[in-house]
Length: 326
Image (cartoon, rainbow, N blue to C red):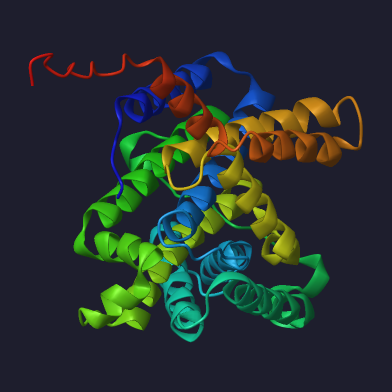
């Protein structure tokens, strides 16, 4: 069951305060890194919602991110929609496709679910890669950023865009937390632990899984919109299974089923990628070794490791001694 422990609330508050403070201290490159972290954070929150709490490990969330990015760009550049309705359309399309994928894969579990979502993701990648409408391998350019000039905000400024990205991460977290606290969220956790029992109680399993997957897909679509607005250029690489694979690595690194852990994992992953890649082109190998160390520690990512260490330091309750004359 989802809950906010004191450690998770403290971590969340520190991450929020640190991110906002960093936006006013960082230069252009630092702000670009912050926007990249925000995009990945939204994606991994979406993935943790279904993988960490529902046991539905997905390898198509990269494709759902790509659907959001392409739908937003096409709606804004070809259909002439402004950024807000284009984002709404892209998120709705990502949610609809995710619902369909969740409904089809609902009866699958474990490796079969993973492979089914991988197949859907690769189908999306191949379709976009070969379609002239989406620019093929060349991708599409010209994705606009929202026009907030009416309230005096210019999102072409890197600092303003970084703050905007952080706010979208906060909205994503609140939506995911509200979902997990709802009846749907409790059903999702129950299905993860004992699907047969929930089915016997009368729950329509496929619908619950598909609905949760749709909400997760909508959040992944939001990450795609933000990615398109950030670089103002998109390519089929956004739909690659490697994007989903990296997102899964980040969730495991931060802490599966903690919701705040994946945000921390996104920060660690992006920072490590940029810092280590400046030293060696084999940064993937080093990040892989770190991931192996986390897994071998038998802790649930960074957050799980800290929680386990704090639990061992708590004073154990005294056991009442049996009365001598009993």
